[in-house]
Image (tube, rainbow, N blue to C red):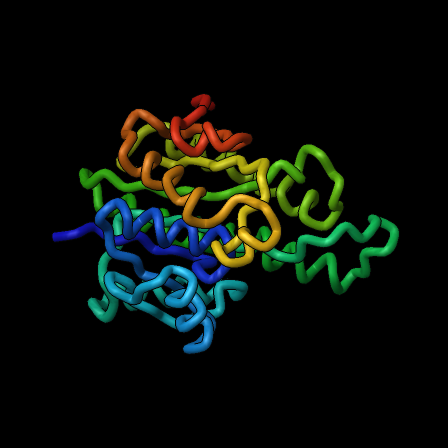
Length: 238
């Protein structure tokens, strides 16, 4: 039976790459989407609906991903052995002093809390699959170190801390946790061609390599050049 990857944030630029990487690896995808329009958008960017099961949920809610896992447990959705979480917010360069409380809370919810909820509510399920080898992957960004864009910088900083804790918690056991630290702009293929940035198709092999590399766990996988998308550059934390 083919394995399945649960993609949280599937319709974003990184989510499209994760979906492509999972499908290219021969695995099926369980994609969480907001609605049918979002599902259609993912199919358009990936180029196929084959191998993808869609489920609607609000991933910014603390009940969204949990509800999906409950449906999996009930046999209403395919079982999954891998998770890729890549929920992101605004990529704005608005200065710190101009960030409203509403904007701050929105982005912390979308970019940090949604990824935290995904981890908290899927890790117990994956651990129950022991001894099946499972993975949990998150994509972070270098804005957390550079601070050129304060809004994403603050949310990435929070994700860095969460990733260290998760790497420690999963240093042993059946779940390989890894953080993909991305220092390049990735967009869906048609947009990438217009803007001269990395395409989702170019970035997809990074996830394929992680899935195929059991020695990569509790690590930060650095993607800072196109060469890093062909050969993983990583360092184990624990």
